[in-house]
Image (cartoon, rainbow, N blue to C red; front, side, top):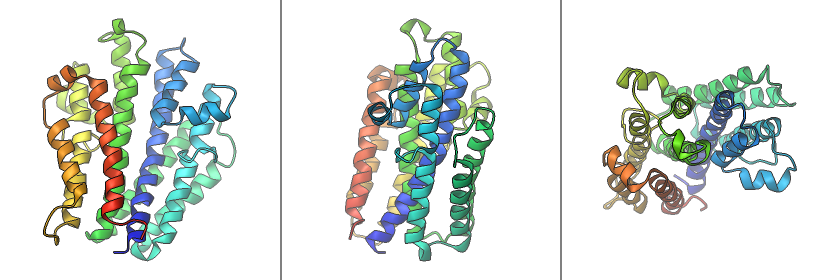
Length: 313
């Protein structure tokens, strides 16, 4: 496969995942804000920090308010990671690799773009926001469903999956990190009802609440939630699940090679060193330090994939 085609597939699906995750993040900000009525600006600052957009937002905006942050994350074209920008980027990449996609995947991607362009043509009011966010999530899910249902399990599929799981792991790690070191007002709140409400919101943001309740019931706390989102390989948005899928798809791409690629070796190292211990070891190491290390390694892995598979040749 040409490197440019691999690059287009990787970033098409990474951008789709980013659009869905940003929509989820806005919903999470809304939920947490309802539990912390005194927070105001600081709450939405933390949402921007999770999205990796805080510096860019403050450099171009005078006021940090709920309305301004939601508009920036949802539809601002100056923000390359906004929901609208991400869906546009996904469609642009889909056009570049059109012949590598099934008709159904292309149609779902194009429909997602058309829907986003229409619904986000103007600022979204608070009354309409839940419906718009839900529609954005459903559009991304439809593309993903068409991919699973119609694409051959070949190199094309593998690069699509690599983009999806790199972005998903990055998102889960950021949400976990910002939750514990920005959203929490003080160390005294750890284990409190406020702490538990926030963790509940985090579970909802990654569609993990139902699965978590099935596994742990209603009485579980911080330790079990961190275990579920970091180390549980059955949970589709956990770090361990995402990194295992990266290893699997890199392995498929390497199957005709005499040696594994550097990217596969690095993915295996992330799993072995940071996602194969129990949660007590993670807390002993430091949750923030652990997540930051995984984020750094994921960014390095993304660059390595681009290098190994010659994305720009």
